[in-house]
Image 1 (cartoon, rainbow, N blue to C red):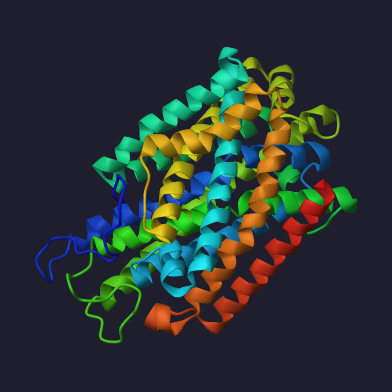
Image 2 (cartoon, rainbow, N blue to C red):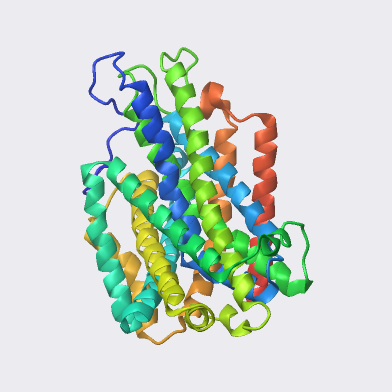
Length: 441
């Protein structure tokens, strides 16, 4: 995406290559599949909010809610695929399409709530990173949060040298998280029977229902639904034949139809691989917590600090170190993705950008304020999930409406079964998050 302020260039821009010229298909296909935009989105599915909910689920109920986590991961695959498909089919992001198809008051309202989602997402990432800095180096929480914010700001210029490098970095972070938590599972000797016990659907009272809603709410992230469509629209515009198709219309006479179909196949593979790896991280975290903390260490469910101490006491200091490192990587990568999403949100809904440093300061200020004010970090994470629960319908409803509309998607519109599945998922997510919100209030 372009940097700086001012109006955005028109979507679906040409790549500057001669008409009909293509990159080598094998090389482009493999690189897109293995390290594509879905890996950037997947980082949001292993953020500090996921750490908190998965540890709480495992410590409180053992493997009981593992089926909820797996179901939420399948839901995430569907939603991220629809977002990615929207970008490939139209050459525009979800916020851009909302701006072109909805009235101005609606667009401004969607932008305002999306910015609130970005701020609360950043709050969770910065708080999680601050906790990790405190656990690793003994830094005060406010100083740890400031360090995490500055580090994430240093990562962002990498995007100016190509979106690809940022994707590779996020894929590397996801691979590190997977490796660290697989080490935790192996180190705790978690038997397969522990995980198998949570594969059958079942709940245990109101508290488990509320926590199930929290798992889904921490999994479905509105900001990466906006971001994923922008990442794939950028990727598609680099492969378009100049002048071959108008962005957003999906014309019937589309010379790039074979390319678009190929990219959609690669998008599916990209989403399945990236979301599958993110799901494996979450499963490893929940299973290790269920093995170690249930039922003898209930205090591990109440804070990340207590979980860190329990890993060190029950396994080894190395296990506690692995947990803190994973939390730090999660916070750093998550806040970088959140900043990127913030640019996409403002650029798409309003057609404007603000300087990156100013955005970093504005989104980080609430997190630093609550950390410096002595507010419980766990309470901060809960607050962020409450606000995110408000933002989910505002992302999902336009996403389903647009991907089912032939005027937007052309020949790439959803099948009827996909649309119904999308509406069912949207209703389920909204209902579960409403239950979570009511319980917290």
